[in-house]
Length: 278
Figure (cartoon, rainbow, N blue to C red):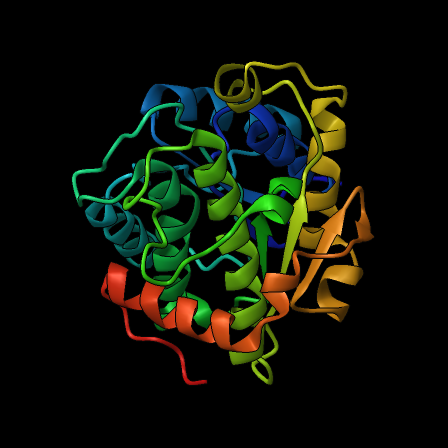
């Protein structure tokens, strides 16, 4: 299928690893992929590769640093300026910081990139003209969310000694809490929201962050994202969590409606965006 016949899909973190493979497979299936990344040089290479796969140039890539809320706002403004209106937001980008790192906004870096940046980007798209075409939001979480914990008085885990895995797991639980609460708030608007575990793949995040190798291929890691972005199931269900292309159990904390509601409100306050009606 040639590019131009399928939906427009914005993929964050599409310049490397699972995100890049996801962008490739979406393109192979006819989607028009807006590839996001921080490095313009890497994005140029991805854009050329996707154009080669599709036999057509496709949408321009979108550069931006998810560690900066100002950059996220600039990304959303650029989408509006260009008139790009994705039908699918695929929130794939993620990091694992081994030591405490803060963004220019003062947030812990893992929490900021994995959760806050995507929270803000989603709401800016929902508030703009692009929301008229938006149909699906796909959030790449991790099975690590099962071991995550969110304390509303310390969501970034800054009041305790830095624990790299604990912080990462909390950020991935934040992804699932966001998915569940956003799905509830978007009910009736024709937009589905689902989260997923991509698998254990030897990406830079796994090898440099966790110091380990994965047993699954990049193609396997991209498969569930592609399914939820383009497959019928992604339009039929909302507020769910998937692993290996099947619905899977979630951390019981994500079923705590009050926690999800309060964490959503806190996230909106942290990034300075108006919450959607409950």
